[in-house]
Length: 197
Picture (spheres, one colour):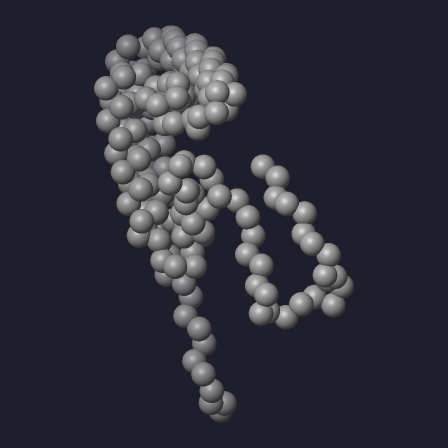
């Protein structure tokens, strides 16, 4: 018999990793069951036409949302360039289409493209602007809450530190140079080049 330290315990599995596969399996089973019920009641051709209409509508929604996102991005870059030329810093108000929730619109289009009646219903709900706005606000609050509760040294904490800004709104980029730390043997005393944006 050997004595020593006990073996390290495995990290605790998150609830999302435990229940996500079960949720996806339940979703697929429900979709198949709904398709068979509707096919039995209305016929196979009706189900096929419903799925085809959902795929066509979803493709159209994704195409329009992509065009709008690209147009908003182009306008935002143009406004930021104009602000830089005039000497002022771009503000949050300069962002065009910040409340469009194009991500949820594209998700709705993707759900419409996926074969299934339940995914079509959820996709149609995401096409409604107040629903997208409410989901966007709750998602922003959840991300903000998660970022504020990050333990020190975690990836979220590093991301939060990278987002810190100066009072005038400019991002402070740079590196920490420790004068008291050990020097690399190949490091010379030549001055460092300035940081460029």
